[in-house]
Image (cartoon, rainbow, N blue to C red; front, top):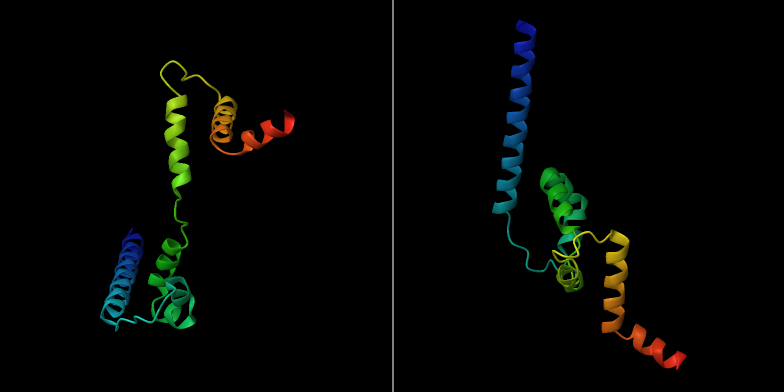
Length: 120
């Protein structure tokens, strides 16, 4: 039983040390001079210097900076789908919703307009 407590205490000390290391890393980053010449944050965090100086922060920064920005088109798609899927049409299958949304997109764009001219 004493060995279990000792191991648990070691794990807690290790976790506390990791938290303190991370806080020290953050403090070091916050107090570092600002570099206005940096244009690409991802490239800066990918440099080996930053990865050595800020190992945890560089991982977190790269994780966050690697998330692609969301365009407005998916937002519009969800808004249009909300009109398609109403209380009366809530049992539509995924394939039917995809087909309807594709047709709505084509009708709103040039795909069907140009297709219609070719077939006439």
